[in-house]
Length: 276
Image (cartoon, rainbow, N blue to C red):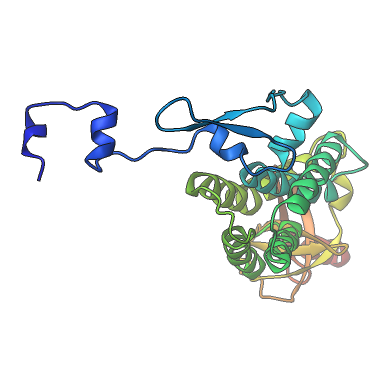
């Protein structure tokens, strides 16, 4: 036990002799053994040292090479993949090709370069694709359901096992998993509904349309009108059961106001008109 070190200090050479510190290989030690790299032994000093004969020069990567070097890092490739697939899913629910689609395709293509360079597990990548497909199904319905749960599980597993022997930092994983789950289960459905409920598109044509209750309305629920799923509420106290035919009688923000086909206010008005 080196008790003198409690109140004293030692230099590097003495620390190495005592076994407290160990020498780390310098750059020359890393280059020795490379084909074409020549060295000589200088025996005029004690102990003899190796002196390089081949001159070594370091060149900084150019902008393009440095960019692709960054893209090929595990964290960047992983986040580009999530962002790219997320934007492509959003583009599926928009009319035409927009900025989201172009950015999504660009991010996805860049991620494929990184995934091709890194040791990527194909089944981990497949799990991430399944995750976004599951989210896309529930985005269409507008309500997070079983596919959202399946997608979230696939997202977590795919993120944890995407790379073989190249771990991703927990901060990157937390940002990717939580950000994607929140955006796909909450943000994306609301954004899609808002996008298609703007006055320029208009939904007045839906008033009077017939549909079907996907889930019981008591008073809120989900209905289908012309094979499209909408959030709806009934304007009557009587709940509407699953599978019952409904009629759209109004639009309130992002919600449809519906009533049962039989016994609704319109049905009563038509009966009153016929009895007069």
